[in-house]
Image 1 (cartoon, helix red, strand yellow):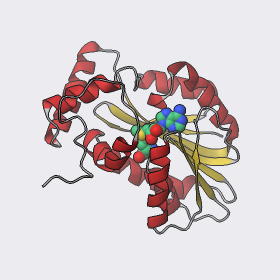
Image 2 (cartoon, helix red, strand yellow):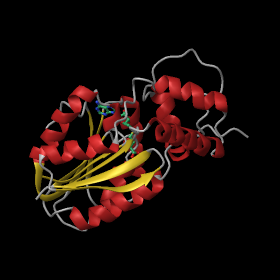
Image 3 (cartoon, protein in one colour):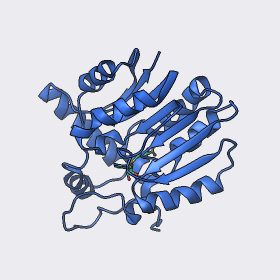
Length: 244
Ligand SMILES: C[S@@+](CC[C@H](N)C(=O)[O-])C[C@H]1O[C@@H](n2cnc3c(N)ncnc32)[C@H](O)[C@@H]1O
């Protein structure tokens, strides 16, 4: 039986066009991200734990590129402070619409507001926690530094930024090995060779990964005092950056 929420968007030959977060992707997104991103559930669980440690009373928390709101909900579950508002932002109207349904159907105590907007155009403020979970990689590389600087300026002392990204590696052999292992991960999760190669082509120039070294250096250059990679599974990593 075919489940309509299963990701089979690339199962048949498609006319190649750039990947978009449209209504078809929104409909299958939870299945797609779980079967495509190694460690996704682990990262979400730890975002909840980080939220319980870092969210400050009377502050704001941002989930930038919120898709269906998994990080908004993780921060809400982790938060035990009062006066906190969680703001989820995404520029895909299909995602925001479905996200609102999700937020409404899951019990949570911290208020969550959703904005349909471009994250490089909004102004954050009074932030104790900001999360870019697999979103920065979709932003034009020339705009990333400005976006991260504006997030840094909006953050309170003691606030935390979490960034999860796909990586590339400077060593060509390691890079190839990681890509091969990631494709193996996708095969083991039921994707065919055709699905893997068509998705890869669709993401070309849409998802632009960087090295771990570039990610860490940029965060340090911006002024974050404590910067670390806290999780890596194959070519996917998650970073934390704390502002003193
Ligand atoms: C891989 S998904 C993020 C997954 C989500 N954070 C999670 O943990 O489930 C990337 C999201 O970023 C959004 N996005 C990409 N570029 C954006 C931009 N410039 N402004 C706002 N959202 C953007 C996409 O619409 C998509 O929903």
